[in-house]
Length: 349
Image (cartoon, rainbow, N blue to C red; front, top):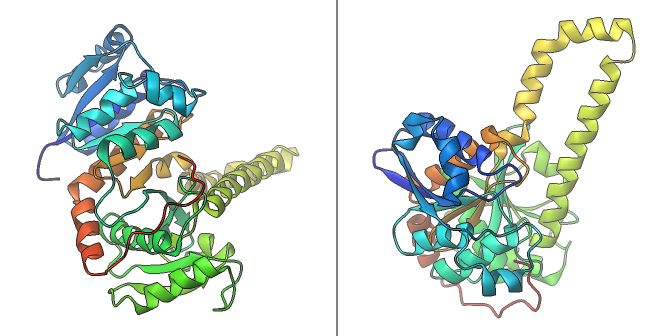
């Protein structure tokens, strides 16, 4: 990064806040020396932790508020009664131009709602999408949407493809990202009308996007494409399935090495390789879901992550700001005449 980047942090969001927020910020400030932080939350809870990190304190500003969005708060309650919460004020800071991006480990629906209401959407984007980075056999890919939009139109999917392609090119560093649409088969005739129309629109768009076509579930881990496009319903199921499978295999491996004296000895020999595998699949390394399509940078950290995971979420936000993701998305959209589609009948924010 070559310029100062200010991130607004919801210091009270997450299962272990504010501890993991401040510890994560302390890791991130070393990785990104140009980062500055505005911490929103209960000052009496923040300051005792902040005093332990003098160098972090020198790049932080604390903004006090007594209000906090709880993980089980209903969306209607949040929008009526939590506008002055640590999360709400952090998003407001981006909307007012006091910060370049916001990061929170709090309530996902509340953060998306605040982002849509306060930051609005980018020109040409009907609905923001939640995306995340996935490890694959070939490296990394980005998948979107992961649950922000249950029902999507074909125009929504095309917009997701454009945003994902820009992200992969600028943040993941892929020179010519390939884009695929998650479907029940790779053949052209498979899937519903919406996904077939979206694929046809991408092929005929004239945009410099390498559209691979349809992909299936196993292609996600294989790294068949760099950008996986899907609606939020299928995307969220794919995400949770991958998380569950990783825990299942991890449990099998631990149980296998504890089975006998010989297996424990085998563990000692295999430990370097197992550490490499653990580091490669560590969910903390991929923590930080992006709200692509809002007119500002907003990143959602997993609520149960630790300080290392939160630091990675801060890194995602810093990279998005540093690479100027939103202006590049707008530039790509301007090349294609995408008419605004009707609002889907149902949506989960």
